Length: 308
Image (cartoon, rainbow, N blue to C red; front, side, top):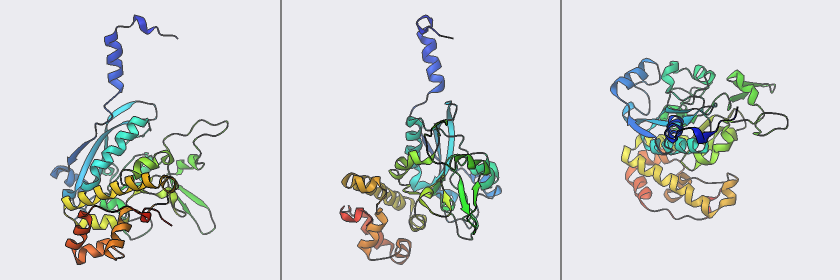
C-alpha cells in the first residue's frame, strides 16, 4: 500500500514523529534512594561488604531503540558515581546511531542472577558478585562494567578439550561475528560496532579482546582503576575519571593509527610512570595526597600514549 502524505494534516505527521522519537541527549542521572538500596540488598545485588555502597552509585536513565526500531525512554543502568555522566553519553550516542538494545533494567529485576539477566537479553551494570567461576570480585561489583545485549554478544568459555560453551545458550546464533554475510540477514546489536563509543567515554577494555573466556557483551575499566576510585572521595574520583577520558581522547588524535588498532596506554599507565609505582590503588592507600597532586597536574602527552 502506498500512502500519500500530502493528504495527511501536518499536525498528525508531527505527532506521529514525536511518538517514536526522543531527544538524543536526554540521559538523566539520579541518586539511589533508600528504598531502591533496600530493594537491591533484598535481591542480593547489594551487601554491606560491597566495595561501592549505594551512596557512591548513580542510576542512569536513557533512551534506546529496540530491535524493531521502537523508541523507549526507560533504559536504566546503575554505575559508580564518577562514570555516570559518561555512561549517559554512551547511551545517548547509541540512540543517535540507531544501535538497538533489547532491554535495560537494573539486575535486581532478576534477583541479581546474571544467568537470568543474560537469558532475557538484558543490558546491565552494577551487581555485587564475583567473576563467574571464581572468588574474585567482578568489575560489576564496583559499578565499573557494562554488559550489552548478551544474546547478540555472548559470554564464551572453553573446556579442556576445546569445546565452547555459550551463555546465554541462544548466543550460539552469534558465534560468527561478521555483521554482513553472504546469504544471511545483517547482524545488529553486536558490540564490535560500538567499541569506539565506549572507549571514548572511559570503558576502554572490551571482553571481546580476550582469548579465554571471551566476553563479547562486556566493557569495563581496569580493576586497579576501579579499586582506586572506590577509595577516593566522589570529587576526587570524578576528576580522576575526567582526566582518564581526556587522555584517551587527546592521545587518539595524536596517534590515530595506533588507537584504531587498539594499541594504547591508558591514563593510569601515565600516572604510574610519573609516580614510579606498579599499583595506583596501593599508592593511594599509602599517600592519597601524592596521587591527587599528580592527577591535579595537566598530563603531558607523548609516545607513552601508545602501547609498544
